[in-house]
Image 1 (cartoon, rainbow, N blue to C red):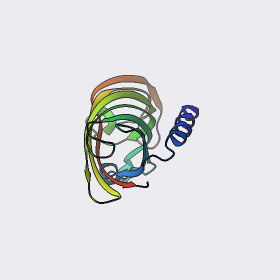
Image 2: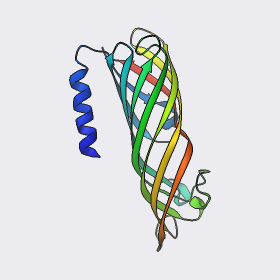
Image 3: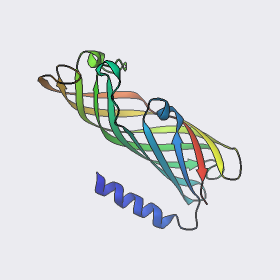
Length: 185
């Protein structure tokens, strides 16, 4: 996975010379204490490639944890021009998680156990970018698709005995973003 991401980033950097490049942060992830950074490259007048990385290393009070990392590459087709107006997107995602003692609405027993595992998936999205100034944009995006998760279940949030393996396929929301975007060139 890391090798594929490195190759993708090198390809994008080489194809992006003399093209527009933007960096961004998703404010919705920031609110959940998830550190995130995205980079987007224009590869054609109406096409961009976006790669975002998200990381949450924090534990909260009462042994709550939502530790994870996630990489989400995305291809975008813009109806007008890149970085302006409406776009449609196709994204993939992959990462790892360590979640316990939290009610996230996906797995009811997150409250009573800890899950460590991997996830991957894909989806489609729609978004819009507002031009705020010469170098600043505000981006909105919503995406839906599929996520597959495999995990090991443990008895309690911090410690506890291994209770087995599990897996689940989820169909629904796979991306939500309110992004603050800075266009480098």
